[in-house]
Length: 282
Image (cartoon, rainbow, N blue to C red; front, side, top):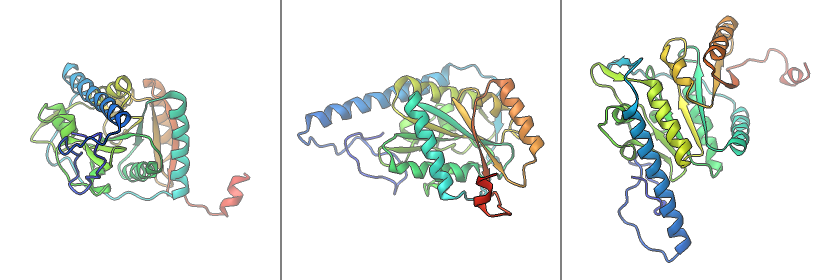
């Protein structure tokens, strides 16, 4: 369970701090604020878990323990990451709690690595962030944040764990990770249900300021497009000189068809064949 009064960073064990060891510090305002934060977190947990139980079992994926495979994506320039972070902050200031999906057409275009770098750049802010690993083909966010593997979203869907038992601390009381977890044999998993539940809980409880979803490749997991309808918008990652423009256009048409809002496109590994300064004036 997340401890709202003890700000000790528990990254070493990879889990959120427990309730034990609380001490009254004489600050009544701090005590009331901590109690309020805990109520909001408990509200988030209750709404998310309840919504997962209420949804009908439709369009489920069948996962096996062979589904997960690690991959190494490609880095994005730090200045571009900072620009993304700044623009997302503006969106949050305008709209409040915001849910964003990070997605690409195909595997290996850099979604997980770019998302990890983006989230770490949010350390300089006071925003409370939840990162959710939906990448059923390559669930590697825990490794990118140097956190141990363990139970996660799949276990919540199967009612084997509570939210507070599977969420991991990236930065104490600010940035948290909900890993995918490891599927058992023929595990049934519904992407749309999971996204709807967490998004609803985030909006109603207002505990998290930003919720990021790392989506599986949209052209390889068709259910991901239906799940993407539940978020406020997508940021599409396109690996330059690999993903064909026809693929990008077709995927954009799918966004329009499903009513998915595209917040932006990131060109990963873009090469400049003439000086970059000239591109700015073109």
